[in-house]
Image (cartoon, rainbow over all chains, first blue to last red; front, side, top):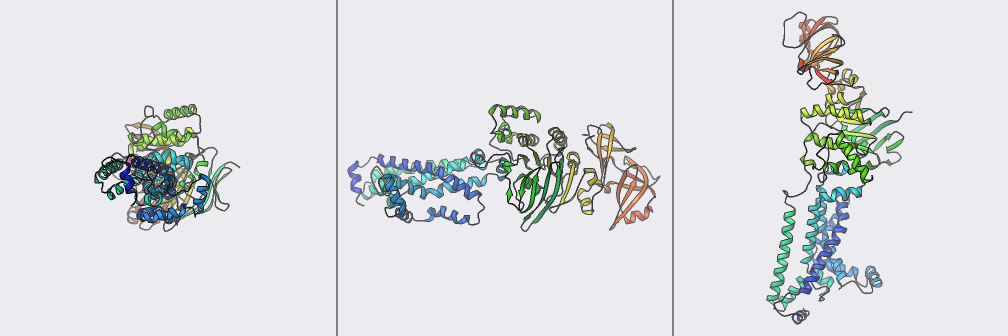
Length: 239
Length: 363
């Protein structure tokens, strides 16, 4: 990995790469935010649609769970590259190609974390008592307003879980980041790649600090998720 | 032609049953229609079709001049567009909203001031003062029922649909709230369809009763008519009350009421009987027949009269005795022979006061 020399040159052995940390958190926050918006309609459709072929869409959403990140990264790279209509359209409009940029990486992260957001959302919607939704409809409240006034407030734990999980999952991305983002300092180099580079350069002290930070953040995030989903605190309807 | 709610539709639940309903409810003056029948008879399904929560695959539902469902021309009016007040069996109150929040939930298109005024009015009407900020989980069953009612009538619906409005309550609360509900329905003057499997509720609340079984409406008519003159054995079996007559309470001594029915005096239990007009309801199996002049029993009622009709049904015989009103008793063939009963023989019917059920009716 040629970039390891760059790391050693950029900062001395025992300090953390704050630039990589900033890139990582920006990426994770934006991914979680976009998924919170994009994931809701997908989860709603998956929960309430009666379409007989729905399972095919469910399987597509779940694909990133089982697909090697390199495979996913490869297809994203091809899809947004200069030879694809999408990639050409993007570079025509924005002026530079999508691969190996932060925006390209963000798009890949969103796709890669999709099931981590959509599945908890859908599970939460599933828990909402259908009779409450029907009662809302008979009170003249449209399906869209029922969603925001009733379903979302009853699903807060699941929505936070989905957002937090997609945030945490993005923090630890490696394969997709390398494939789509490359390894560009300040643009697409994230913490997990930084750790890899440090270890390659035999700078264990630097790797240890960054790794510990990632461990602590991930643990904290999971604590939050599991605490949110404790039944005794949850806000499910009383039955 | 006067406005009518017309239902003529069919809905199939694969592997379970097919509901076929035909029904006309005149809307002016507003009446309360009771869908009466055992569980699984399709009452709730029919109510949900009226609410727009189930779609019949054949037939039509028309409210006045507005078609709600017409399978032939693909008309499917959404529940939102029907302007109904629907109260499901377990109320389905929104746990995230307060009492006031639940009541004003369907009023969001009104200006805030009008909304607040309407909520205040309903809180008063249903005696929920002081509970405005409570969450549904903090309320008793009776309070939840009243919040659900307030929410259902908040938008001034053109049709009220109540699914077993009292079944989630304990017996004493049920009796009390049934009276309140009847008063409220009269006061609101909104056409209503009420599902129940309780005959006392049906008699007390209903202007018209439709008896359902296996997804089909077997008989429709005035409550007293359906109960005392069932169209066939199946309806008789479902309603299970063979004698229903109108009476006047003339005295009430600590819950032991004296009722006058067409010149005959009866003792019955009715602690909650307020007002004097009642239905007197007696099950045929609660009536004991004895020869005239036999000994004293613990039964409070001894009514004598001639037998006017005898209907053998298997090992049993349904005997009608004219004791000022037609009273039905069911006895075995053996008992009939022992008593030497023939049409015209005079017998004494003994009924315990506890078996004489008194249900308030509108005078």
